[in-house]
Amino acid sequence: MNMRKKARAAGLHPDYWYAVEYDHAVRPGRTVEVRFWNRSIALYRGEDGLLAAIENRCVHRQLKLTEGSVEGCHLVCAYHGWAYNAAGQVAHIPHELFGRSMPTFKVASYPVRVRYGLIWIFPGDPAKAGERAVPDIPELEGAGRWACAPLDFTWKAHHSLIIDNVSDFTHAWLHRTYQPFVNARLTRCETEGDRVRVSYDSQIGRGAISKFFVDRRRIDTNHIELCYEYPYQWSDTGGKIKHWCFLLPLDARTTRVFFLFYFEALKIPLTPFRIPRWLMTPVLRLANRFLIAPLLRQDGFAVEAEQEAHEAHHDAPIAELNPAIGHFQRLTVRKWEEQCLTSP
Image 1: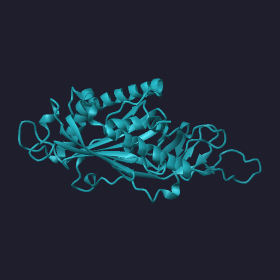
Image 2 (image 1 turned 90 degrees about the horizontal axis):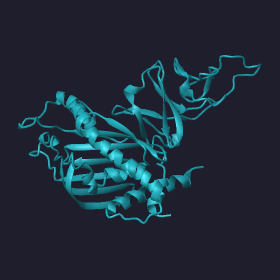
Image 3 (image 1 turned 135 degrees about the horizontal axis):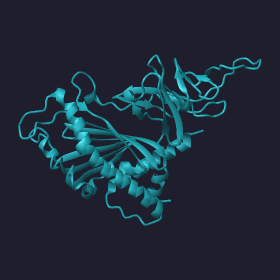
Image 4 (image 1 turned 90 degrees about the vertical axis):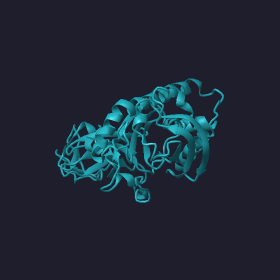
């Protein structure tokens, strides 16, 4: 099997933290279903405000627990009222036990954290959760944190297609209306452990509207650094314009993608003055709606079309020119094979 086919069949290693939902989307007393590589997980917040994530299955009749309700700090099955605590343990059964003592039934539970407005779950070995860290983004910490307005998409495409897309700047033709980058020339491409580093000389942010907000006197917009820092991806333009891309593989052909674009500053169009920090977040929300989301929807169209094309022509000869793509795919396959060897 060639590397491309292996990459398109690979999952993502579960022993990492994965963004699964926005923190504000799970209020006290609410439960939502999230998925990781065909695995259904019940994410809920107790009335005490604490988050928990457990296998989305009642051990009794196998109903999804997300069909039930949150009662106090427990997630209660809709059918017979069996209540589960944050550890996945059956904590209460409201009906007759038929002379038996309280059973010790349990489903899997998953470590949960909140950072950067996102809820993160560790779907792998819980004992390893402390060995891995949610990515550190110092610009989004503390009183002087940069403005950031996250956005997400669910695309009908394998996660490796999205990594190929976001770090491959040969597809400028797709974005010729918005021109986020033009005239890209690859200057670096190398794998360092579990990272693939890529650099391009390119003209960044040259769109008809976006060009008025970028302060080119302070920012070098002729070069961009990108990294596939498995299983995440990020970019850096001049140390002032950055982004992270967090993938959540729902299954072999569906991926939810969280994008965090953040800026040290933008300028007021046609002036030399910066947009005040207090105004940056509202400006970014407008930019998401009118510029960034439409641009990313073009990427969504492309990766979904490529998913369909791969399924129809997976045995077709490979015709790839950008060497970065091979690096991305080899890392994806290596990490998946690594977890396959260590899984029980």
